[in-house]
Image (cartoon, rainbow over all chains, first blue to last red; front, top):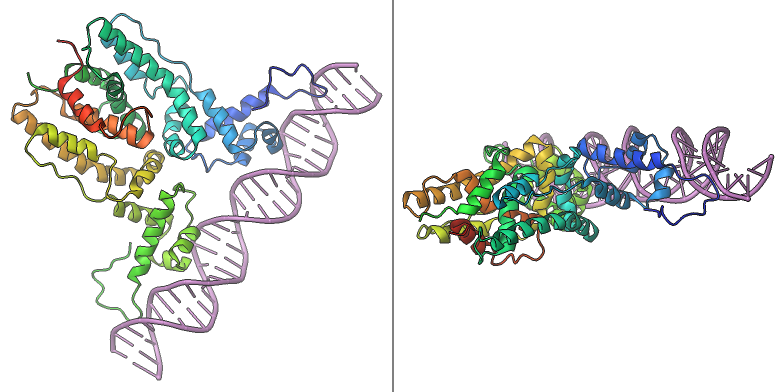
Length: 199
Length: 199
DNA sequence: GCGTTACGAGTCTGACCCGTATCGTATTTC
DNA sequence: GAAATACGATACGGGTCAGACTCGTAACGC
């Protein structure tokens, strides 16, 4: 994206902020409507945004750069654990997985799975989005250990995968159609807490 | 795919089996090399297979039909749990998730994530592949309950998601680069068995 | 008002692809 | 050997798209 901050000098007409927004919005809309990443064309975006193709090329080098910016815009706010009960905080965090303020996110997320393995940029973007959320969960788990609610010998990283995995495969991959997504966060957290072994 | 069995009548030259194989192989190769499903073109497949386009169109109605057949060919054999220890069987099954006899499968799997949410056919194909594997795990869990190794009040479906999810997000989405994939099956199974709660 | 830059809209060239058709040739049955 | 069907190769019309370009117009600083 072009720099916006350090440009006190502007001899001619400034770039339209509305065009910026319209282009990004059009991109996300088209993706959410079912277009695949690579079926997405600059021409379609321009038409949808009510913008000339040149206006897009003036701002981004190509489709990849535009997509990177558009997806960055999508990530939204993170859930904030209350900090009272470890169990409740975990339920909150697990429930927030794959959920987003922007409803388009749910449709777009699965499209990223192939991109993540193909482009280092996309992989980095993906990690940038999820790693602070992982950190949040990590802190809750550490707090649980400190408070003595969780065992001290657990592997925190594996536990995060344990909590995150079921939710993610259900939301993104529709892994098991018979599984009720609504109550899943609670049930996952409780199962992980208690274990399934007889004792 | 055209029928091959009930064709005792064949007035002319029979279809080449080598062409069949070459086309399927070329399709899987191209996918494994990083082509996305929709970037895949019949022309590219034909060239790669050393085959005329007409030869492909003579066998399949279009790209979708060909892909369906190609992916069917990919799924490979299921792991067979030994039936001695519930824990060991679970480790085996969890370790088999996303692992395939065909090394190309690992590269191709992530490409299916978007397709699953877009086409009912692809979703069905995907479910057809994984639901027998889910069944296998379900049986091991039920056996564990019967044998008294596992608690009787666990939710079997949630437990399957618990075991499968971490492995799947790691193998398919590279969820956490710091997580060691090699030892993950064991660690996931043990964590799920024991739970993380202090007691 | 003048130079500068952005704007939406459109054009143009060169790719690439689909799906069909047509080559000359090869392989089968009768 | 004749009819039938397959083969690889290639050509075709029709389509989409990338990017660079051109319009006439609009918004800014001086």
